[in-house]
Each structure stands twice: as structure tokens, then as C-alpha cells.
Length: 297
Image (cartoon, rainbow, N blue to C red; front, side):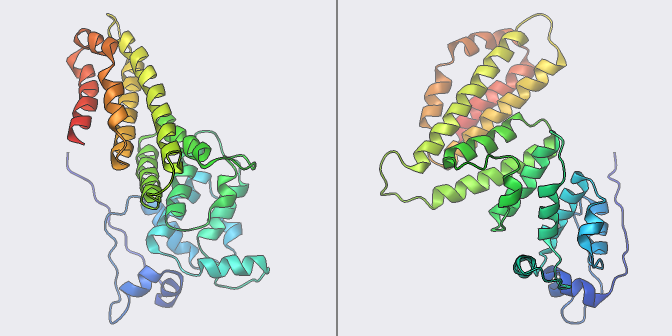
């Protein structure tokens, strides 16, 4: 089936978009009067974000949007590299009403205040963690899903990882996996090699292995069901999800050079291996991918 491509033309004021987006300012430098934006996944959010550049009271405009719409706008803002973000945070503290008070901050304060339904938490966390990985302060929003009481870093890591592992929404799950992997990679690179055996990195690895064992236990239960004569699509779907979780956790551990215990744990799954011939080739293929995944790393 041929891919359907939509082309949308927008006529805007150069001074407005240059002021609000450093990316637009760069693209319009020199004699350029036209910008082509390729690979635009969410046209509606893109158009709305450009329209918001003209808005003087952004908070009143955003309050009319749903959480999913604001998340879409926030993602486009990050893509366009909006400026005046840190200026706005300073002005907000002094109650200044500058016309430059326009950027991620409004969307973050909206997300802090507006009610979420349970399924929207995954999308909020995905967007917020992506901004956090780029150095943007997102503390107030994170407090919505985490306790105000100080907790060890491993508790926070465990909470975020569980959100990803339990997510059933493919796009949000894919984005969160990429962002979390990036955050954990940064944490691993910043570690001090001369620390004691019980370092934060080791504790983080312990947390990941705890989640591995949980996923493995779920995978075994599901494989027992798949070995029965009648199998529901829900069981198959859940098995595929758990297998994908195991592969993702393996990627994290391999990147942290801590996958040795994973190999031992996987090699000791005698019951899983015994069930393997009793499960259809289509379904046990996902389990074989975990073995292949370890061999490749």
C-alpha cells in the first residue's frame, strides 16, 4: 500500500517565528524565505505550536487543550528549540509579564496542575523524562508521580523502569525506552571507577536484575499457558511484551557491562527450555530472540 503524504503550507511572520524558535531563526538566516519541515509525525501539534507563537496569554490557550494535545505541543517545542525558557523561569519568580514568557515552561506548569487519567501517565513521563535528559527542569511534574519524601535514587529508577515495563502503548513505550536508556547511559558514564563495591551503579544494576527476575517469572507463567491446547491472543500479546522487556533490560545491562549474571540466570531456565518444544514456532521465536540477543552482545 502506497504511503500517503500530506503537504501543508503555512504563511507566517518571519519576525515572530525567529523570535520564538532558534531553529527557525537559523533556518531563516540569510536570504531564505521558505522552510521545509520533513518527517513531521504530528501535523496538528506542529500547526498548533506555530499558532501559539502569536499568543500573548498562552496559559489561557493551553488550558483548553487535553493532556495528550499539550504533550504533542511540548514535543514540537523541543524539536524547534524554543528560546527564552530560562528567561521565563526567572520572570515567573518575579511575576514579570514579559512578552518573551513563552516556551516549555507553560506546558510543564499546565501538566503539573491538570488532572491526568492513569493511561496518560506513561505519555507524561515519556515527555518529561526526555526533557530532563536535555537538562530542562521538570521537578514539579515528576512530583505528581513520585512521593515528596526523599528516596534513594534506585527507588526513582525502579519506578520509571516499571512504568516502561508495564506500558502497553507502543509509541509511548518506544520513546520511554529510548529516553531511559539514554539517562542510564549518562549515569553509567559519570560514575567514578574508584568507588566501593556498593556504589550507586551497582545498586542500580541490582534494581535492574530484580526487574529481570520479575519479568522472567511472568514469562514462565505465560509460557505454561502457551503450552496448553487452547491459547488466547491476550496471552500471546502479553508474552511478546514480556519477551521484549527481557531484551530491553538485557540492552541496558550490556551497555553497563553488567550482563554476566543475566547469562547465568537465562541458562538456568530448565522449565522454560522444557516447554519450548510444546509451544508453536511462531510463539517460541520470541524466546529464541532473547538467547540470540545475549549472544550478540
